[in-house]
Image (cartoon, rainbow, N blue to C red; front, side, top):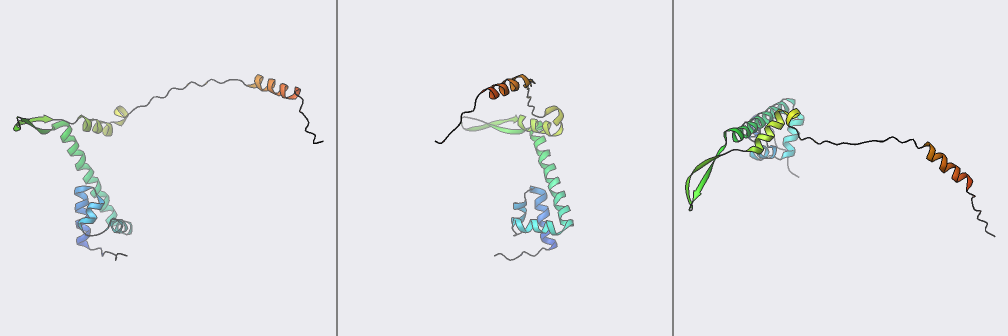
Length: 147
């Protein structure tokens, strides 16, 4: 069984910094030499650490969103080769990232829509039930004598 890792101010600061850059608990835990379970235990035991953790995740996700925005709108430079030689670059934009950004920021307008149509017909089953009841009442029930 592994010993419990001692929580120090330096370790918690390093953990939060890596978490802020990566949004990845495993990566942050590995960077300071602890297991994920230890990191979660520290978070559960300390409201202050939990708040720093939450802020770090929000900042990391904001950075991811900014990078998605950059790649969707500004694009990236894609190399162009001719005859095995680099001859230049062309801009490459990500329509997929643009779609995700629109869905995230304006879900009421850009969410995936599924339309289900259904028609319900209400039928009065009383006449059928009465006919069935009459048929059952008029049919003799056979006896099963064991003689």
